[in-house]
Image (cartoon, rainbow, N blue to C red; front, side, top):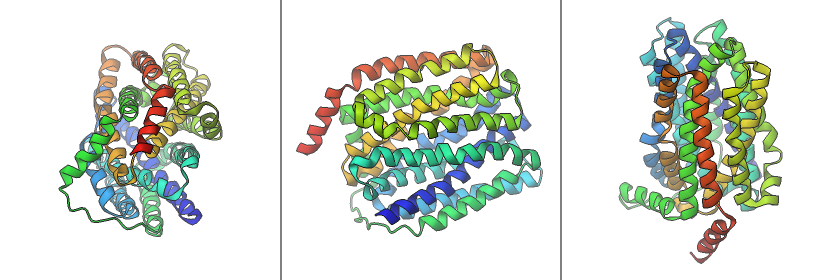
Length: 401
């Protein structure tokens, strides 16, 4: 068990490095082609669309095929996307349509990889350590790796447009090799129709009040975050007046928040429980975008706000993921995790489009005001929907089942 956990973390380091390089490079490359907010937002829309279009079917695959095999397939797709972008950028043939296609493929690989690793985790660690394990993987994905990767991406883009993609291809290849070395539990070959399997996971998610409420609030948060993220590169370059390296350093501030809160999230959950931890995180999370909208454009101050923002997001994400893992039967876990992402993250393309429209017709600061309003509404819902009593009822229902 310990060996599998160490290997899964190694896969996360390599794979997140590849994803981080690609996701940080794509908006920078887009800005080198166009500065129209609506066109820049298209890259984010294309990058978010697979969560809506592919997640449900990915869950069926994850529950039918050994999960480490699906993980390896995801990184094989990642290698291909990185090589395509590297070749096109190095040849000086970059265009917006190319970036849209690559963004779609990169996120398609994420849909498979994140779903497979999330479903694999409860097979490897004990239930009482799920919060700590999810925090560790989140830190690897969004913290330690992205602390290094975004500034590195800025330097690599400045050196050569195709350089980040070449490095990403090597990292994804390493993740592929490492994933193949994790022992996999055999899966029973399902004889039911894939659509019936898909329906079973979706039904469990929708009919469980706790999981349904979490998904609703994640959908609101994802919509809001996508609106802000799609315009963040323009906010950094046009409002804060930083270059590609400064943009990378601001992304690194986001990573600092992930790392800082990861050391205390298990203690917070142990002391407060999942309900109060999620209420606290969502309430504080509504304050950060408001600060981004009203504070003076001083990059160090904005960096502090970004640290605060992602600290609250990590606490919420860990509790959200751990709740799905704890309150879902193992045979359904892959489908429930991906069904959640399809429903919760399916609105992110609309969020990105909204961000572009608000920035174009109002202002870049106005985007953060819209984000703050949505997050505040979600905080009210969380207070009423995710009470301690709701968690107790869900736990009793699982025990009875």
